[in-house]
Length: 156
Figure 1 (tube, rainbow, N blue to C red):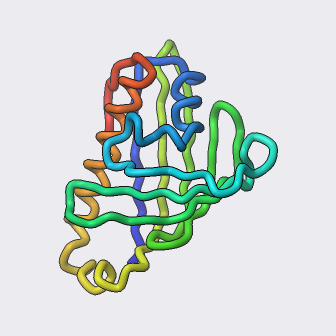
Figure 2 (cartoon, one colour):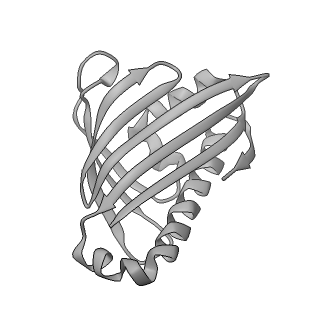
């Protein structure tokens, strides 16, 4: 089942601090509720392009998802893109913008689930899966703001 998610956070903090926290994915479990683990499998090349990590996420619902993420684009400190494979397959893109000490973070996530039970139940549980994703992302915005010593001004 395919999903398209768009998350935005406004954080009162410099773009470089926000960038560094997002770029250092192996440390996400320290501040992002729901991220169980991020393990680097391949460091990739310049600026981690080509790097691969295995990520395990657990949310408010009683299941976890695990997938591998490969970084395909890095434009410091404004953009990171990657592709995933495993229990979630698709593409994600982080974009960051700063104005007057407030950093806007936009995350686009176009993903398909591969777990058979999720795909069978998707017609019925799609709104619940979307709510769950939004809750995990809101927790990420709140945790990121704390991590960088800023304030989460808005999240959607």
